[in-house]
Length: 175
Image 1 (tube, rainbow, N blue to C red):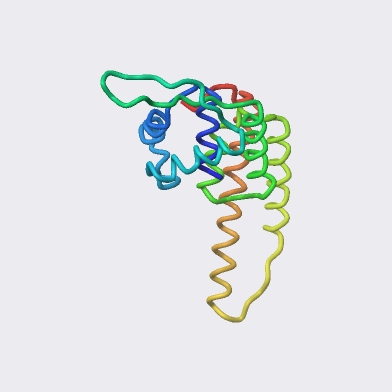
Image 2: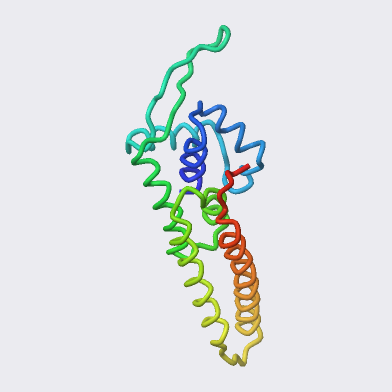
């Protein structure tokens, strides 16, 4: 889903050729979130085209190179992008490969709905932080301690994300 969100998000900003999309991904170091190869990029492009989320806008010739295809996002693709972003928050997906792309392109969805889902996530994390079990064994106790610290980290971080979303309505693009 992460590469799909990024491709659709970039195409929502500007129609482009897959090579240019890859260039933006590498320049922004998003390849740290997911491996980016020509193979998985073009596979995702083919899938998005098959699903009617993107279309071939034009074929262009640059210098003496082979013709290249420029893609643009469709209305269905914009809806898919919005749904994919909201789904990350609905699923409470802490995995950076899903969460970071969703945040990068959050301006491509209903901000109020995304903020509401993040608020619900924060509430769930607060509730989880209250539940603590006493363990007689050191390893389960350490696991629980790690889990609680991670919860506290995400609780604080999501509060900051929510504050930014609410204060600026995050209307700027990915850059």
